[in-house]
Amino acid sequence: VAQRKLVYDTRSGFTQVPPRVVTTAGGGRLDAELYPFALAGTGGRLAGLGLAASYDKTFGLSIKIPNTAVSAPIDQSHYALGARYRFNLGSTATVKLGLDYLRRHYLADRDKLTSMAVNLDAPDVDYTALAPGVSAHIPVTPTITAVAGANAMLVLEAGPIQRTPSYGPATVYGIEALAGVDVALTPQIGVRVV
Picture 1 (tube, helix red, strand yellow):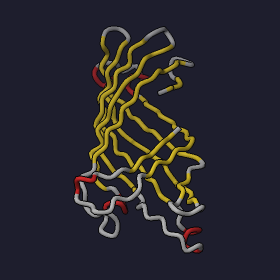
Picture 2 (cartoon, rainbow, N blue to C red):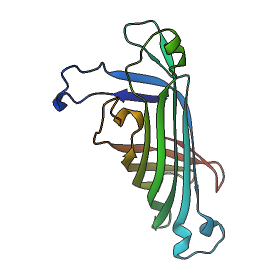
Picture 3 (cartoon, rainbow, N blue to C red):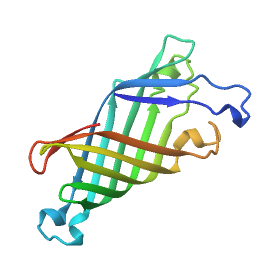
């Protein structure tokens, strides 16, 4: 399940604060990490160097236009590409440091709205960011590992929401945290529930 909220800081001098926006829908996410030097059996310090990728897509998401019976479909997705370095703590626990390039977008389909003369007064977002992060992986059983982590999103671009016709220049940042478990299906393939 994915949820997005848009709230406004009333200290910024707005005299008329737009309504709070909350959207919720189902979604799917794929994550992959590959450590080629560890798989090749090279060992040494290069064994901890890896590549990471993730893709997230929300399905069936829409936003109700305030004061109407009309809804607009929303295209929401996320992808990240990055590098990891993993440190072994003891024989099984690991800590990973990473740096990702990521994109997130939340775009309303306004085509139907235009033909109905309905206006959605909520700008789209299309974030581009660099995200340094850290995560820990601690085995609980031979096939279940507890995971926790956090990323800081250093936003480079926010898309239409940050342009003059919408809200204009702003300080934008993001924080992502996760906690859950990895379940090993084979020595190289697992399922993550976070």
